[in-house]
Image 1: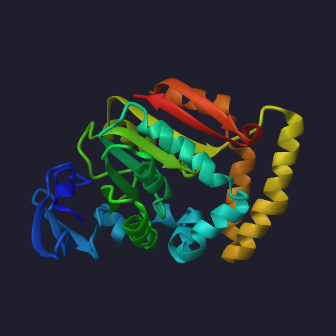
Image 2: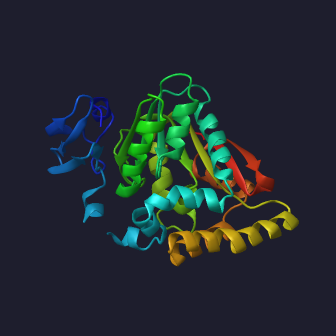
Length: 60
Length: 239
């Protein structure tokens, strides 16, 4: 995923902004890492460039 | 898997056979889905929106078609709850999007990860029926679509419909029973999913009923363009 995508993403549960953590990148994009919601205390995983922003109860 | 996802038979086809999903769609629609989707993409691009969201994007066909048809560089985002579909969408977009900016995210339409009013246009290709046919979550989905659409933003739907003429409807239902269901079942191996598709297509709204449904949900200035004697339609509605 591109960095610009983070600007339009929020937590799907509380709609607060997300903070990028532990990002690993190639030349163009973020390949893996986490998008952290401080309010919900939840990390949304980025894997193979695709961020998983399903609410936590849908990931179980 | 949650109760919501396990109760929807199409979830299995979305997660288990994505490699064949595009092929099955082309076969069961006799290749007509491509043209109908192009009409929806053109409707999405009316007014040259900057931010476009393709919900229930599956393997990304609507998002990629929008990217191909755009003569400018909109930000196109695809969202779907099936990770395998998104992996195919990402790979296809790299090959087919002609350098346009398409991003895919794993998300559910009922709880979208975007602020209010984020998008100028939202499109949905052959999945509106899944969100609204005998689905108890329908009000949540429509509220969420309206939430992330900006005021005056457009919602574009391409979906199967009911032909107005009883004579044409008879042959349309014959086609659904004798071609769509058996070919989908044989190619996918998933009887339940294509039984659901058959039942939902046989009983889904006509174009007039869909327009009334959208009006009741809070959309306005709703237009419908019918195809294949009314067996499919592209709708555009404003928030």
